[in-house]
Length: 187
Image 1: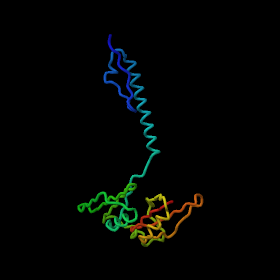
Image 2 (image 1 turned 135 degrees about the vertical axis):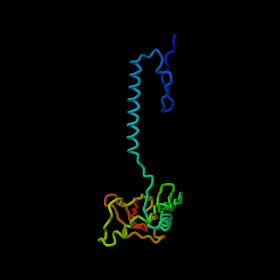
Image 3 (image 1 turned 90 degrees about the vertical axis):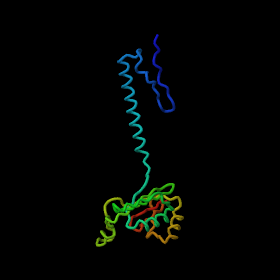
Image 4 (image 1 turned 135 degrees about the horizontal axis):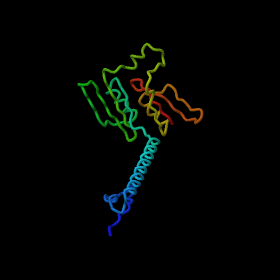
């Protein structure tokens, strides 16, 4: 008497099917097709479910900022966010420099390329408040907005205004980096 194929064993969340399971003579072609179809359906449902989980679980990974002077911008971002240099790229042949800065919660890429246009020059003859389309600002949630304001004041960075949300009564403010890029802090 020939042995029947053993049923799949569950190991954690992985299903292991013995290699000869589908080839045993006790499973006819119709049954094999049904098993194939069932497995395909199961894999499709799992893939769709996994994709849905990922969509609702986005977390920012890093931001990249184009700067005019990478050295002064690196010093500025290090002082404001207590970032450490992770990597430097200096590609003189292609005319750009990159500085990757990081902390335990934030990864920032600064990019300097002398062929890039400066926002300040483009907007010099435009009415006050004119902006270029694209990303507008980066926002940060801070556990203690007063401590954040005190830290920035020590760096001689003073926000023009502190806003209070009418619904939540929580405060927030905006500052600019050396190139005029907006950063917003929320309590």
